[in-house]
Length: 342
Image 1 (cartoon, rainbow, N blue to C red):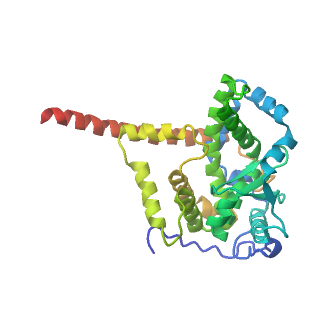
Image 2: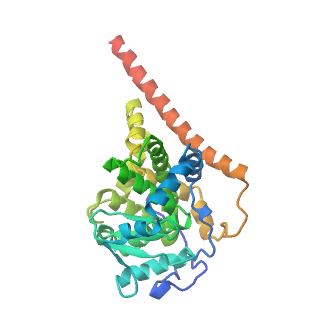
Image 3: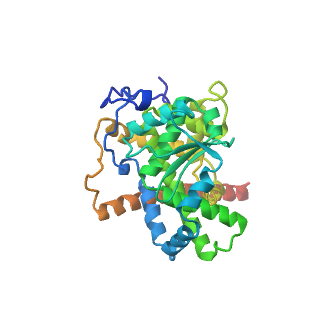
């Protein structure tokens, strides 16, 4: 076994029957699991900071009032086909299995849209729904599709969909130069994008718990980063690439790593892979599979503990970044002084 292999003994967990023919017997059904289990501290920290932005509530209410629930649903679903027992039945079986494994409160509507881009999304205001692009269905294996479904279901169960819908709307309106996107809304969009990137780290963990197969999760990320088949790609090489991205580069590289993310709705795939690996290696994933997790209805940590954990995640990330910057500056300074000695 190489250092990149994952050899977990899942056992049968809680057992349980899969939805409509799905086989959850080899996975632990995570009964009553709270979404807090998979929520990344930086996700909660970014959302708390977002809610403190001036005019945040006003802009959100204005957008909600301007568009409304029904037009939003029609806009997203007009060119999509609803998945069910008689339409995309294979996807329906996979989706039911994912819902059963995460013990989702509902089978939220699932749609497939004709779009070659390998992607999916969870949207809505009061009534969430999930859309998978046909490109994802074509490229990914069944188990990888289940990971994507679990990822999007994690967004829904974490109540991310309202903010994600607002983010998508503001991005599209900003592209069109729509008058509603003034300076206040643009500032809020920057905050929403920052939170949106952090929310993806939470949903990646939910996707992992949905299929309980770390290697498949990471191979999905590899495919979504570069396409290609298993024969054309190497997961160990992609993991090495992720490690090199984190540790390599001079000071300018570190700055551009941050700047390159500012306009993005999602973190880079190499960063997401590294975050999933870190969560697994910290023992959190195995702890959940053993049944040691917070249930819905259990008391949440105190507000002070929650804020402290979230702030710690941000502080640690900032410290790592500053340490990398300092090391890079030393290397640049040393090279600069060496040039005078020659």
